[in-house]
Image (cartoon, rainbow, N blue to C red; front, side, top):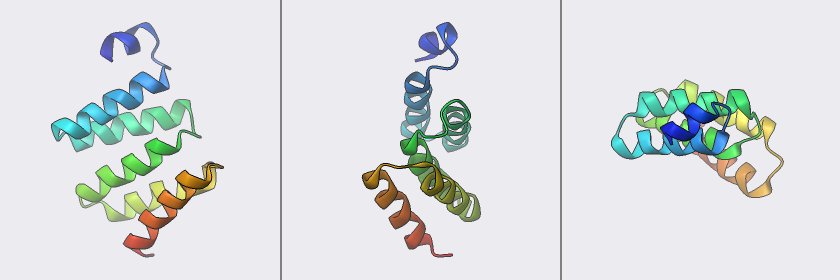
Amino acid sequence: MRQLLADNPANTFARYGLAMEHVRSGDLEGAVREFEAVLTTDPKYSAAYYHGGQALEKLGKLDQARDLYRRGIAATRDPHALGELQAALDILGD
């Protein structure tokens, strides 16, 4: 993933993959940074909102997770992603 990003820093697929690797390795702060980088390049990448929010929840940053879910709800047009983001937000409550 890092080589793909070195060749093309705007490669959202590679950046998302790197974020997920951070999640798998337990580096949630690193994951959040990478998810935000994905969204800077592609603000409609709905999975980055969901998994970024999940990482923030695990870090205990619930207000930031809510904000990310809300941003995702506003950005996505995919009904499945919209449902997942709304369900995650509903679980946290307002």
